[in-house]
Amino acid sequence: GEDSGSSDETEEDGEEVVVLVRRQGSLGLKMWWQNPPVVRAVRSKGLLQGQVVPGDRLLLVNDVDVTRMSEVQVVMLLQQRPLELKLLRRRRAEADIALSQRAGRALPTL
Image (cartoon, rainbow, N blue to C red; front, side, top):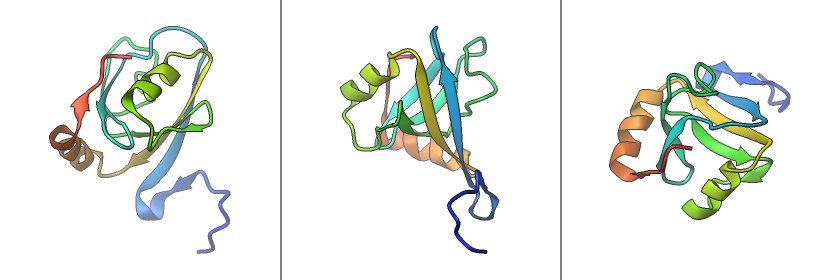
């Protein structure tokens, strides 16, 4: 179909953008460091359980593009509150995680 740019879900190519807002507390996220950063695990009692899934790619933190930032810059942004995250979710997340484990390194739990 036409690309209007207004659709929240892009089922045809297996991708969607997920937006999350957190006002306080730990995110409970474990991430692989690469560009862009990839979620590797979500703590079972973390604030984002059920909202973020392993394989999600972090695109924006508080409307700042983090896809080409350094590890230190991204961690500093993720410590801000309130916090708005935009993540790209792909249907083939398992493949992304496998690639990330080879290509990236683990960040501290955020």
